[in-house]
Structures are given as C-alpha cells and as structure tokens.
Length: 327
Ligand code: AVI
Image 1: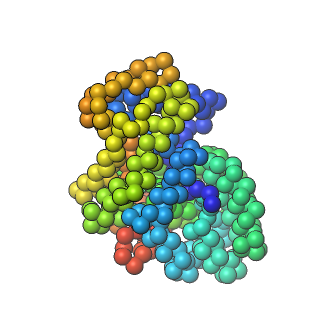
Image 2: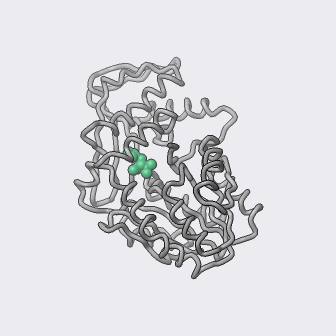
Image 3: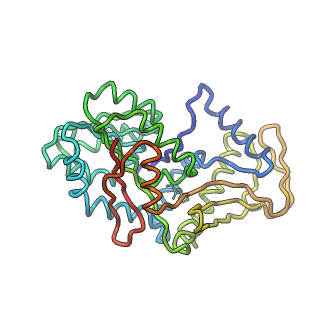
C-alpha cells in the first residue's frame, strides 16, 4: 500500500537536502529546540505512519473511512446540488482508499468528470493511474505529481470546469491554527465561485482518547518521531543515539493542541554535519502539532478564509468531520 502524505510538503528546491539541513540546524540552534514534522515522511516514516493508521488507539483513519464508506451518497448529493460541471482534485491523494468511495458514487451519478490526484510522490501517482481505472471502470484519472498549489494552478489550466478539492486525512491538523488559516486563504485564492472544498478535521473529544492516539502503548508513535533523528543521521551525517531520547505527547483541551516532543534523557552532545549541539538533561525538542477543532471553529476557519460552510459529515461518534465548503 502507498501512503497518505501530509499537507506539509517540503519546499521545492534545487537542493532539497540543503533545505532539510538548514531547517534542522535552525531548529536545533533555537532556544527552544524543534524539528519540523514535514520531514517525518521519508520511506521509513511513510511505513511507520501506515502502522500508526492501523493502531487501535489511532482513531482518525477509521473515523474518516466510516464517513466516506457510509455517507458518500449524501456527500455526492451535496456536490451535485451545488455544481454539475466539475472536476475532482485531491491534495495528498495517497492510495485514495477513502476517496474511492466518493468517486464511485460520483460515477454512478453519470457525471462526466476527471479525477486529478495530486501527490508529492511520483510513485503514488503512477500507482493510482494504473490501479484506479481497474477498480472504477470509466473513471478518467490524470495524476499530478508535484507541490499542491503549483499543481492546482496546472489543473486550472487543463480543466475549464468547477473544481471539487479534497483535503482528506485530517492533515490540516498538522498546521497551527494560524498556518491553517494561511493555507485555506491560499487555497481559496486558487479557486473560483462555484468551486467546493472538502476538508477532513479531527474534532475535540474526550482528552484521554486524543492523548492515547498520540501515545500508543506499542510505541509506534515514539518510533515515528525517533525516525526523524535516524533520518538526520542517515541523510545529514548526524549521530543521534535514539536510545537517549524519550517521546512525550501532550493534549491541551483548552486550545485543542496535541503536541509531541522528544526529551533528552541525559546531558549529551549531538553532531549534525560539522555542527555540535548540546542537550541538557530533560531538554525537549518540539516535533509536531496535531490541532483538534470544534465544528464552530471549522466554520470560523471557513469564513475567515473566504469560504462558506455548506455541510458537515460526521462518523457515528462525531470524532471526525469532513466539511464541505463553497467559494
Ligand atoms: C498526518 N497526520 C494527520 C497525522 C496526525 O494525526 O496528526 C500524523 C501523526 N502524528 C502522529 N500520529 C499521527
């Protein structure tokens, strides 16, 4: 299986590794050390994230799957009530295991549309172009390999129709609320009146349920975080000893921010390239935010970024929502 990629796509650069190196050095030099979660997703990180999605504690994947399996007909009706002349663009399509339910329903509606899956992984796109037409005969697929907004601009040139943009997986949670607003405003700028977006949000719920999802007993989430240190060792000549770091997750029900940190278990020095970094005992490195929303907050995000909320679809426990917004 392929991987659902994060919305946090590393900047395109002549020298991708150079940007990675600079970002790591900047994060480790900061007063409060941090690393950027967008770098979690190398091949090993993709594999670990696949494992996370299968964890009993990690509910978001199953919740969103329940929504798309069970309510695609209703989502399809919402789309068709709003526009009939459209193409579908999916940002971070991954293996499309969720969107396939919606695509099947849209095909049943005899609507004539093209599906444009966008992903930063060329492998993911090639695989989708092969497999989807077999699973959904009659589906027109045009894969787009590249950065989200660039690809959205290209789709606008190719397609003279309205766009239905899918941002599933709750990836928007890996932005701070301010970054999420910037992302939504930018997305809105690429769209026209008549276009729709469908965004997946992980919702506020019992704080313990959220904390458990990011602090699983089998330690996969810990490995997922430690893998970034191993990636720095592999790609940037680092010498992190991952046995000297612990994983610490917190959830603040007040702000809805679930944050993860790595904690240095001793006073130590770590080398990255030719630079040395000191870690104090129990000094933390901030790794990732996974923001949780109330539905009022998603409505507010919609209006603040130039969209109008149209309909929200929930799983049976109302733990996750796929929100349809119009332009
Ligand atoms: C990709 N993203 C939506 C995941 C999340 O839930 O924030 C990444 C993740 N981090 C730890 N577990 C899962």
